[in-house]
Every structure is written in structure tokens, then in C-alpha cells.
Length: 397
Ligand SMILES: Cc1cc2nc3c(=O)[nH]c(=O)nc-3n(C[C@H](O)[C@H](O)[C@H](O)COP(=O)(O)O)c2cc1C
Image 1 (tube, rainbow, N blue to C red):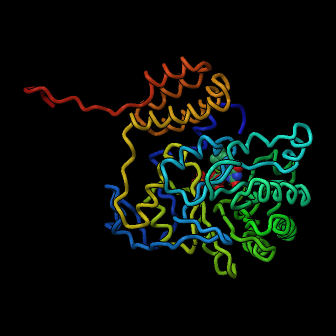
Image 2 (spheres, rainbow, N blue to C red):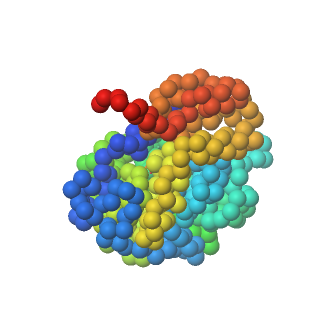
């Protein structure tokens, strides 16, 4: 992501996760349409959805329970965000932002330090996945080895899905590699060898373009190269974030995997949709990205729903505000008040997204640069519950 605290970017990327959003679990044969189906209880209890209680996901020896994963998101899933998600519970596996392998090695040679994106990784609880990207097998292997053996992370994930030009056109990495399943296999194989016995996974999209879907060939190459799981975002690189993720095309990959699990990803923005996805599509686990920025408690809701328990409601807005302040505290402790405040702008916009008064909050928070200003804007403008004025006796409609 670009400069710190750009709310416009946050807005556009959240557009599919902020209410009102379309039903995203496309072509679901059983879940039906919430407006017409009596399987869908909008009051928040997914009890009548044909219930499939998925078992834990196994990535090599690592047991992930529930099989609901927090996705890697560059610019967002740093230690502070992961800590907020961890405290709320429910995410079976959390992932860092993607880390450029050659960048890691350059920083190490220059400063002897880890890149900033590895903030917290050394000490935080496991299971934890670190995601790396590059197209250079030796750099990927060297960094995979370091994060697996020096930092002892649970899973090393390789990014083959990033559609951003800096990664694809300039670095010939990320989703660029989906045109070449063989190359993907070579890269995975080298990293598997370097990380053993730590499991290595791959995260892909369906292909580079809609007329060049390569996910099945890539999936086979990933498995043959020794990866322990595959995550698929049900869009092509060309799609970026437009349209809907195709769970049908994700599901179609499953019969082509001999034994490794398939993790589906795309447009899941409620616990009910997580339940529907397991009921309707052939996946072993699901991964949530954007919807967990405005609702980091979505994992706890999904966990309850998968167990057939009542889904805890979203916290009241004053608790959401407190959570955002807790997040701010973690960010400021690491980056200092000024940089921390700038960095927090985009997270603050996420916390407000879709709530009453979000636009005004965004307008104000987008310009804060000092902690006092930030706290004042939060106090004055963070969304509050809309109170319905009691009707005075004798007033007319
Ligand atoms: C701001 C942002 C940053 C992202 N960064 C990464 C990343 O570093 N690595 C990765 O594999 N995917 C990244 N993604 C893609 C997500 O992990 C996920 O595949 C995608 O958003 C679809 O899931 P969703 O519909 O639940 O958001 C990013 C997505 C967004 C919106």
C-alpha cells in the first residue's frame, strides 16, 4: 500500500466488505438468497443453514482450529493488527504482511536487522505464518530458511497472487508467475527444501487473466513441489478486486489436489457466509482479509457460528472505539506518536467504515498528524449509536 494513512485507498478496498454488500458466496446451491430463503436468519444465528462443522485444518504438523485464517494484507496485518485480532480470538492462523525476499537480504546486509514487516514475529504466540515473495529461488530459500529456523514461525507462505504492478511487471513476481506453473513448482520446491520441517504453503489467484485460468495446473505444481497447503483467492490478477470471487472455480481445484488441503478466499464478510461456504463448497478452510479490518472480531463470530453456537453480536460502538484506541496504543508504542498517528489514520477509517457518521469521521481523521488531534477527532467524530428520539406525547407522524 502507498503512503501512510490514505483513507481513499482504504475506502475503495473495503468497498466489498462494507455494508450493504452483495451476497458474495456465488452460485451457492444450498444457501440461497437471504431475502427468500428461510435458511438464512438475519438476526445473527446461522443455526438453520445446513450445518457442516469442519474439522481442524492441518498444515503439515500444524493444527489450525478453527479452519478460518486471517489473510496477509500488506500495510495492514502488522503486529498491532494481529494482536487486536488475537485478543478477540477465533482466527486459527494469522499471517504477516508479505515480505520481499531480496529486500529482506539487503536490509540484513546493510543493518543486520529484520525488515519492519517482521515486527513482533519473534515473540508473538504461534501458530503464525510469514508470507514471502520474490521470483528468485535462492533469495526465497534463504529468507524462508531464516524465518523458519531463526524465528521459528509455524508456516512459510509464498505469495503468487499479488496483482500490483510493482510486484508483477517490475519484479516478475506474485501473480505474474501464475502464467508459468513450472516456475511456481521450482520456487516452491526450493523453499520447501530450505524450510524443512517447517511447512510451506502457496497463495494464488485463479490466473493472470480471465481467459488464462491456470489455477489447476499451478495447484498441481504446488503440491508436487512439496507444499503443505494451497490458498486460492477466487479472482484473477486482472480482476484486482472487482466483481465477485468465484467459489465455484476455487472448489473445482479440490479434486486435483491429492492430499494437501485447499483454503478458499474471497468476499467472506460475515460469520453466516463462512458457514454457508463450508456447507456449499469443497474447501478445507477459509481465509478472510478485508472484512476483518472494520470487524476484527469476525473470526470470533465465525468460530461460534461453525460450532453451531449463537453468533456474538458486533460490539457496541463505544467498545469499538476503545478497541481502536487500544490498536492506536500498540502502533504508537512501536512507531512513536507522530508516525504512529499517521499510520493509524487508515486503520481508523476501517474501524468507522459502514457505521453511521463514518464519512464525517473520515474527513476529519484523514488530516490528523498529532496524537491530541487524533484523540479529539475520535472523541468528537467516531461513529456513535444513533439514538431514536422518544416520541413526545401528542406529536403527529
Ligand atoms: C490492502 C490489501 C493488502 C493485501 N496484501 C496482501 C499480501 O500482502 N499478501 C497476499 O497474499 N494477499 C494480499 N492481499 C489479498 C488478500 O489477502 C485477499 O486475498 C483478498 O483481499 C481477498 O480476500 P477478501 O475478499 O476476504 O478481502 C491484500 C489485500 C488488500 C485489500
